[in-house]
Length: 244
Length: 244
DNA sequence: CGTCGAGTTGACATAATTCAAGTAAGGTGG
DNA sequence: CCACCTTACTTGAATTATGTCAACTCGACG
Image (cartoon, rainbow over all chains, first blue to last red; front, side, top):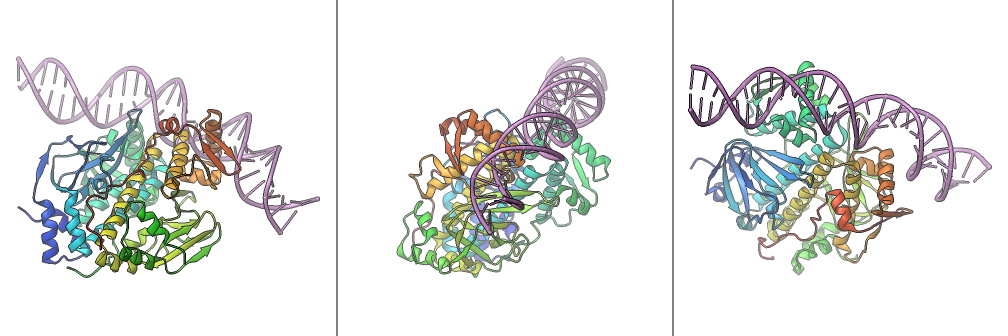
């Protein structure tokens, strides 16, 4: 119906040719809606599908034996989620709708013509995969080597910068619908300690909160505290093949 | 000179055609040697190159403002390292030789003909990138949600399973040349605490140590303790394009 | 033979967790 | 529209895992 979300995202990095847009649009022929809280795909289930997020937020997570949960990544409109399906037969993580979402599911087989006929798109997807990998290594350093306060701050900064990729005029206030328990599962902390850190950030004038909105004050200074680097500013697409 | 290390690795997933082997071999035309401890590439340097590891071990790391270090990943023969160069102009992490190494550097521009003429190889590289991403998410869960002992155990298990991809007959004893400080930087712990956890693992009969060799006893049970999953067993290459 | 890096160990400090209790806010059925 | 219930958030006190500091051992190496 409306334009492709994924194509829109890709066009932030490269102008696409009509043929390329067509190929991308084919990934978004179907659309399904899920309610807030729905587990769209469960860890260890057979997983043949990937999803383009058309609207709403999601997150991916794994459960550990002791029942604790690690949230691996938040996902926003324009993101492709469930990409581990491309590498494995069974899902390595679970996918949940954090808000009501609209998803465009497509079979991993749909990737084949993309690689065959659209080398530039394939290469761009590879570039994006590498950027996401780097983003994960940043999180790794955050969990491994920074304080609780820094981790929470980094999560907020990362979220805002990723929202800006699609909406550059977003300012520094945004809707942040995670519970403190979810923030804890994302940062490797307990909900109680997240609470204390959030209030500390407020008291120190780094952030403001109301309802489930957050405002970041002096992002520069906060980034310092959080040891945060914005990786989303620019991708290097100089080496990509010519358009098809 | 000798056969391509990277091709050999890829053939563990798929038999390659002669043309494909040729294309891969082109990435390994040059070879450079580095001594144990050499920083091959430094974070924030301009980075045009990727490397195939022909022999030896490396690791990638980032430094934080307070001087602490997070080791992001160990790298073994057959691995391609510095892949973040494909996405960014400047290096996002540093690369060090953990042992004496032989590397085959290639310019990121060399990826272009791969995507243009060898869609199946491109797709396979995408699959591998996804598998590495999943491996990173496992580490994330390890750092975020498991105990110090579990993290150390998981590092050992992960190392052994990755060595097995290239040498399946390796048994359960292997050379592990990391200092306890390096183990700490990989697991988000201090060297002192790594020491205590290693001895605990020995006392509990999970591992044995001598020189810088480690033996894992009853991997099954250790994997339980570490909350570890072996992801390297099988990749799903069923969706890949036909060979070129 | 002395120096240096790595490993080991103990005593102490601290960040984060756990437990417990309470408040506020939103949703639902009567 | 109110009473109730549930879920999230808040706060304090006690506990614990891990970090810090400091000293010592050992083997390798020049």
